[in-house]
Image (tube, rainbow, N blue to C red; front, top):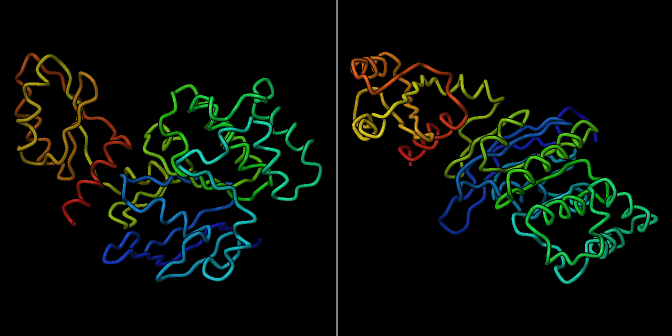
Length: 307
């Protein structure tokens, strides 16, 4: 494998009948990077991942993955990646150890027993080695699936919403593992709905309606959005929430517990709207840095208008 980019795709497009699931997506992912793939359900994330790893053939476009052509060398790509799907796909009537041994033998790994022992130890699965996979909680299933992806020592991990339905502690442990892998030179492309996970990625891409809307680091995406954001707190937030949605300069009003985030790209109009509330004793307000959640709600709103 040569070159700086592990993934380099251009104008990748996939249609299912009249539906354009992925619409001319271009993406570059560097070696050793944890790259976050964000977007609502049906945005094209999974379809794009499957085209990158050769499980789906694009209708248009070109590119490489690990230096291999995504159109003509899918077999070579699949030997060198680990792909973790949204749905747990290992054998539920086999134990953790049996699942890993089966996969190691399927890949014809040298000394599969020793390899499995090392994986069990590295992912703290040794004490549960004889537990049936079907009896595991979501977090332990996820850890087993990651171990299975890593047995053949891939250069690239493709993780499709790997932490959906997993508790916060298990999600944090999983991400600690991801960053350990990245420090060893493994590249990770991970799709997620969680903003705290997005903040742990080196760079991000946001898809909606099959189109790539923005890409960059978290701070770069915030700057690209052009948003100004104000935070309102106090006993009066519920009373003004609906009122704010119809006021000048306001694009989104998002509740965060007992606070509201009001965002818009027209800074002057938004400031006038906020100024009109300053006389209220039941409200406090301050301008804050937009968060990734503010930015992605803004992108999604723009995409809905365009559609």
